[in-house]
Image 1: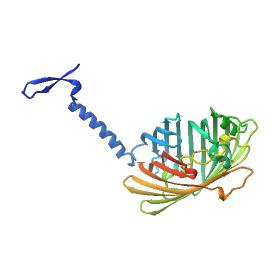
Image 2: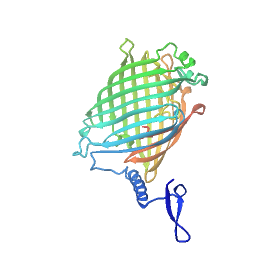
Image 3: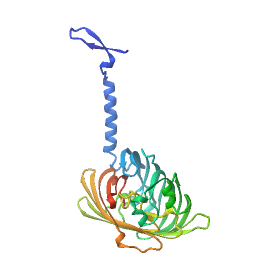
Image 4: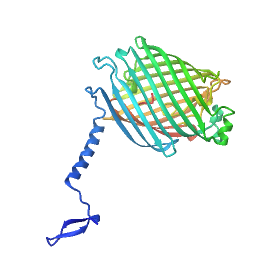
Length: 382
């Protein structure tokens, strides 16, 4: 046992057991204070613009909870940089690296960003990720997704890389090629999940190539305060086994400042596919960006459409809130779009400005049949 010296009432030194007395030296206190101060200053200054830095990056992480993945811990590194620091008219480029792991066995790593070259003459929008997700499957089609009894378990493995190479051909107009590769696999399928596949293969591997037409007047891509964005993608996919299919994707966003610190944002998204579309690449509702609160992939089919309106309000300093309302649906090749199948969606969120105009996003979304979900992410949903 280690001993320590403590003053006695009689004025003489008394010997006491070390495990009953906590000895904190001045040096220890200074180390703890210094560490706490460094952490505090790091987050306090993370949203300040640092023009002297060639690459301004900050890291944040912590625990979170989501309805489908449960308790987990995630980490995000967000970076802002310029491809031409001598030209103040060239917008900032951005990149985000992210990782996540949860108690259900879900884990994910990825990177996404927008690399903008001098005077926006051309740019590259890209994303790359891999995840393993103990998931649920309801089958293909709106009716199957609407049936609670269809819920069945499987392990979803997915890797995807995609990039758009955009060249400016006019004021705010861009065109260019797009390429992608997607590998998906379903493992540990329950008997019900295997039945709902209706004989489709458990794993798929598809390469995609196509063209993009875009108009973009947003003032800042990760968190626009004003502007309009339209993007149309026409792409063909093949598994190199003679089973091609085609995809048309339309994204349209609009942003308008309506009061001090208040932004009204609209998002329309449509995905239309024709040919023999595999179950792994069917258009899905739900997730962290659209139809938030719905289990991603519960509703899936060849075609999908969704619309959302979100109000974002900065409250104080770096804190803000958001609220949204919207709806969406899916339908198959032998069906027509039906207003009666529109699924409602609404929710609220908290925003904290992690870097200048780049927010940490905490959202809680609600939907039909009591569905709800909590989402933690970096940057706005759209």
